[in-house]
Image (cartoon, rainbow, N blue to C red):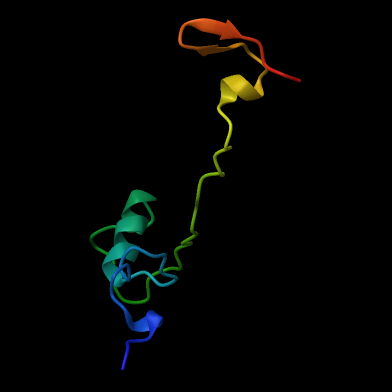
Length: 81
């Protein structure tokens, strides 16, 4: 019998989590200067936790996309249109 894909631990800690632990929330609040050591760790204010990602990279290099001249073994070859 095989293990279901959702139960495998290969990348379990690497993926995005929607819920932060109390320690992570306190760290975020400290960074935002919304929490001090004198305050209680109970009933912490909400902390926005959004997943951010960079845009996709294009398949073509930027030089080729801009219409510049490409070089092959030291010779200049104009881009075919």
